[in-house]
Image (cartoon, rainbow, N blue to C red; front, side):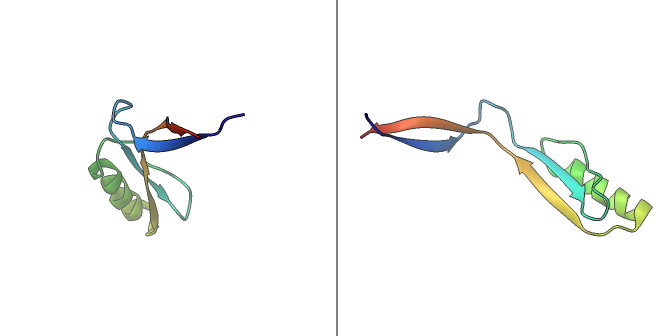
Length: 71
């Protein structure tokens, strides 16, 4: 039996990170976007429409697992 050490690295070939926002009060969320501007605008519009004022920002990125060393 052999053990392997694995490492995670950021993977760019999966695409750019996706940004989104979610209202903490009601759970509605913005669509994903390649940058923060669309989710931020969604938050401001949602706040104006509902009075909800607390949001969770989310970033989804990609990682690749690779074998670093066999022990």
